[in-house]
Length: 248
Image (cartoon, rainbow, N blue to C red; front, side, top):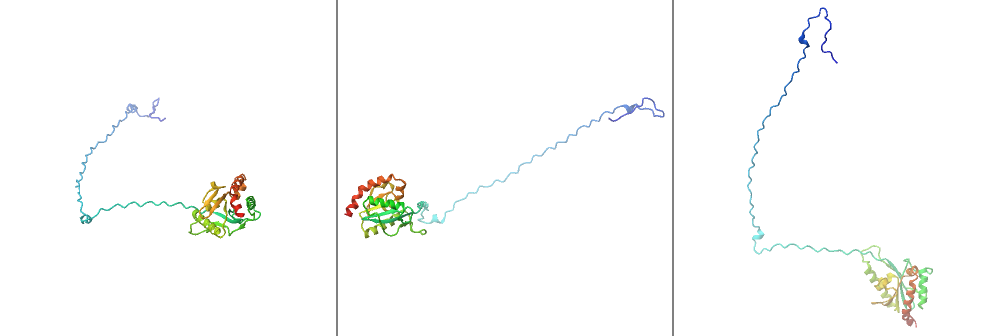
């Protein structure tokens, strides 16, 4: 708090006479606000764009239309889309041709290698031959038929090529030594020699150019599913007369 005026209670000696106007409080000065003058904006007239003239193009006759006998251009027909057949991988199998009496046996090799005397599949085959009244020591005819023939190359090695090769191989062997019945043991033998599938097991087939054949399940399948042996035995009894008459 500041002291504005100081008045003594007693008169001081040698003091100047007091002036009452000093005790009056001056009125505050009110300053009038300054209002800025509003400047009126002069409207700007828009600039008119010049009107553009519309150009009319007159088509000119082409040289082709002025020529006599001109033919209209025909739209090219869309070329038909050629759908390529999916590439089928070549089948893989190994077959061995054997002879027992007057029967030829085209047998699927379960391991892909020739039979050994102690192989369970070969022992089962010997049992089947004894039950059929045939020699139980079959003779090997030629090398195993393995497919595909080539690992690389452009030669067709699809299912149809495999069928033609197997049937051609059998045809040559049967011309050398005829047989009374051809045993097709295993699905690859039935499929590529007899042109049939697994539904033909235990049935007799008539193959053009090869004669009668008997479709038999594979040796590996018979060992895995022994209940199939009963159907094989029943089918064998129906066909046994073919090779027994030949043996006699």
